Amino acid sequence: MSRFLSAVGGRQWLTGLLVFLGLAAASAAWAVSTPLGASPDEPSHIIKAASVVRGQFLGDPTDQPATTRVTVPGDLASARNWPCYAFQPNSPATCQAPFTTGPDRKAETSAGLYNPTYYLAVGWPSLLTDNAKATVFGMRVVSGVLCSAFLAIGFVALRRLGIPFFAGLVTFAVTTPMVLFLNASVNPNGLEVASGVALLCLFLALVRGEGVRGRGWMLSLLFVSAAVLANMRGLSPLWVAVIGLIALVGARKGRLGELFRARATWVTLVGIVLACGFALAWILRTNTLNAMGTYPGAGTTPPAYAFVTMLLNRTIDPGFVGVFGWLDTFPPGYVVAVWGALAGGLVLVALILARGRLLGAFIVALASLALVPAVTQAGSVMHSGYIWQGRYALVAYACVVIVGGLVMAERAEGLVSSAGISRRGVWTITVVVASAQLLALAFSIKRYSRGADVEWLTFVRHPGWLPPGGAVIWLLALLIGIAFVAMAWRSATVTDRAAAVEHGHEPVTAREPEPVG
Image (cartoon, rainbow, N blue to C red; front, side, top):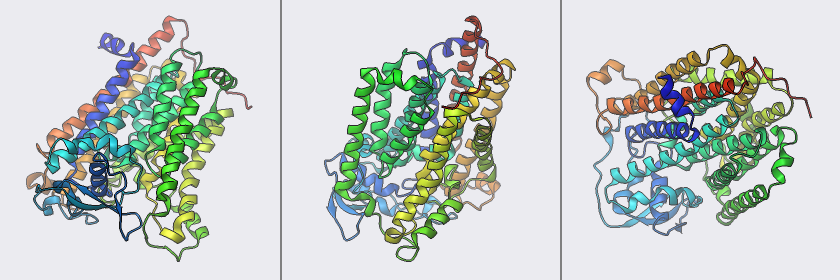
């Protein structure tokens, strides 16, 4: 087994491939196990994707500010009627009417003004079939594959910093059940989070690493990640700026000078600016941020009140871990506790151990998590009301976890390795995370099968709605996917430690604190 792990871990691309395949399998399990239309606004995103790949980037305006009318295949035109169970956690998915086919017809989408980039990437399965289920499952799987690729890039980038144990820990902490659920939905939110993770990890590998080996491919992936992130949602260009600021503040002393002396760095930055420019031009052209509809609190809630409410009540949101369906299905408490311990532990220890530039980067990440939602909601509450959902801040959550993990790694990676606890740590954390991920998916299936409040034994004995192939096969697919990630994680820790010993760089108990300034 050790020989196999060493062979895998000796090739960074191979560990990245394992992480990608594992997360893609886990995302596919969620994609098939979720009824059609059973994620926030998914029917509108499905219609938007089908229309964009047919050349309708905007559609015709309607009397609703954020809604446009487009022409799509008949099997998708009725998508907004699919979620008959929305907002009713005890209503099973058996209420869905049979799916029918028909000629192209008009349909309305509340995502009509959104940037077309995501929809071009995932909408093409609608060109291959007139079967609604095959189309949506195809879109979901494509979305999950793209998201998994960016998350795997993040793992490889962190590993290049020489912190294999914490690279895996951060990957598991970032990839909450909510992230997998969004990966597997037709919704740009999932790709926004995944590309944000890749962008920050690549930035940190560049500004905290040493030497120039591999810098070319990292800069190329940095541009791709930034360009994708910037063009996902209305606030996405802001997340690019936040991540760039975290990297600048957290850069190792003298490293920025090394990077800026390379022409490739400037080419990459110009490309990122152009990508962000396109995103901002689209936002201004469509007035997306001011066309969000009207929700509770509009016209009656003072901005200062909304700011304080968000700051105190929504900085830590259950949507980071999991609020499935149409924000109507909360996972069992054990699931929340697992990621509360993972992320909360990283934050607490990082606050204690952070020094110098990394402390500044961590403060920027924490500030973005607290202030971006509060400021955004305060600025829009009079016009649109309370519109913020916890999943919108998943990029900020990921930033906090990643920087927190880097702080712990630079202070304690040697302690973990030299104490011989990395092996036990990998498998212990994997078992805990796998059990929580399985419970989250099983609970979601139960909710759509018989209802959230139905007893587990009743669900097992008398299931109602079930995903294609049944529930067991997709729970097994999720478990296999997590096992792939764990294998990549363990192989990286084995190989990197062996390489350090071979070259006479046995890890010490902790790195020296970085000087301030």
